[in-house]
Length: 212
Length: 293
Image 1 (cartoon, rainbow over the protein chains, first blue to last red):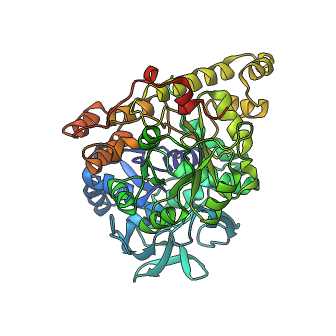
Image 2: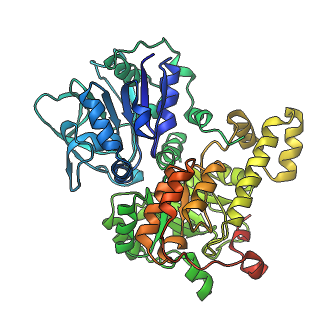
Image 3: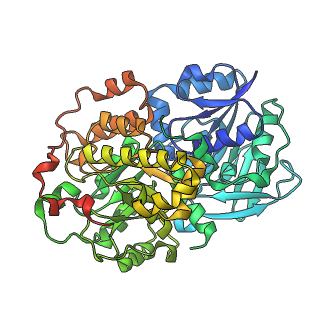
């Protein structure tokens, strides 16, 4: 059965696994190249992009991901993941560089500027979608072939091309499953109907248990 | 602090999971830490090993120094306020750093009260030796917990003790009949509502990092295998012979904590570790973990 992987080097890994599991999508962590085997899609989660970029490089996971991408693997980057997928990074070096966008890192300021909002993204869901921005980057420019999914103020908050989805916010930190459902469809995977109101912020802890 | 702001603050800690937070005293050290893959830096004037050696009252660092470090890196910047010193915390919030550590490494400013963290918008991380201490800090508004290993010693034994104690007490809270819980909470100083949250999810309901005395990649991997969500390394990096190399090695060992072969590879030729101190040689009244309650 086709699966979606979550890059598990550092950051908000279990939060994505928890959302995918609720949708009934087969999912697992990706820590080494062999874990990419049989994946239809890969999520690069939030975390620190400088840390993730270095770990991707030294364990040669970057090359393995690019190779799979050329063979049809779909990608979604949230927050730091969006930075790693961008071809251009303001005052920084690109990571995987697989979508033609320019991003500015930590573009809102310190943690005191982190915020929640709700916005309509007609391409993704009929109902408004809650969004959590934590020390978020901004997508400042889109290259040819990249579509904006959500424009806010002076930046794009979500964008995509045929193979890559990027969001500067964290759908995995909200009750909403809309973006996970959208990415699963992009990967050709079916999803279940779920009661989103049942979600609680501490639900990630069930996927990070203490050792027995 | 609204519950929405508290959740946002706990969620920033979630994004640090699997990472290493490093003590730095200069912008140059901060850049070395960032390049090595640190997920955040703790800006302070003296690392715990120097505070321990030099003695005297240890206070919040010079805000100008913290500001310089903030300007030098793009990763989150944390800084320490004294236990109970709510005005130092107000200044750090005004400085717009990312996280405050209400820390026993500094000299406590109040021997009765910790900071009421619910009055702030900025997040706090606090140390804990056991489940009661962790839950009391959460009740006061801490959005992240860390063990309270003996800082500046290069000796991981106290952090291990704290993590094992927390894990044991969490197992007890989860497995006992509910009618025994009020008595257990009374005996162990655990706020009942927080105990119920622990019982529901089977662990602390917020991110819990290891801190205090970690000096090697193996120390970091051990704390991760004991169930920590990430690690702080204080004096262990910049008091060692080759800080950049050791910092990189600890980052890799924290990610691949369950793969001895990878931890082995990064443990070779790291140069001199920081000098360690045996805990029994430290007079009781100089043990930092005993500060706070």
